[in-house]
Image (tube, rainbow, N blue to C red; front, side, top):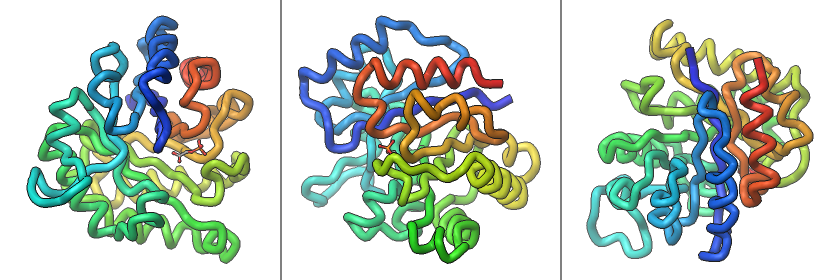
Length: 246
Ligand code: PGA
């Protein structure tokens, strides 16, 4: 069965002093039944990886190396000790104009380097209000998920753009309906075995106070957590809630 997964996304946050939070998370020794990771800023990935907590990057360039000033390759992240990389986060799609094709290339780059991709999809508020959520998600999946996805090489993260950092979340019924539809789409495209092996995380304003409800929803295999992953006191209760979920 799918292992539960709580992944933190520190975004453009974290200086050396903030490693103390990760130290506290490591010291708390959360349940081994839950996979955890923190996707840190590139400057801290190497140090985080040495602390005994699985680490991810937040983006990678499709190429292995070359003249791409300011970019970071999947190989560099792997070399720094990362096991994961986020691809297709809505902030990168919006801030850097990343298309589905680019996200797909970055996901393939992650695999080339031996990383597991945490691939994000999600509708905007306008698309949500227009009732276009599933159309948008299907389109993003078709365009950004490479052929050959497996339960080991990809984790899908459903993150409604309007729920990220806003304190808003869809209702439990809405999250359930979306995750159910995503599961069906994975089975359609990758077959029944792989389709049920790929984990689907929910992301967007997950915090200790709503984690148990969200993790109780069928086909929610965990969460991608932004703001609430920065502090051990906020993130550890989320990991515990995931551990306790059925
Ligand atoms: P949030 O961010 O938990 O702060 O809403 C989630 C994300 O962007 O991954």
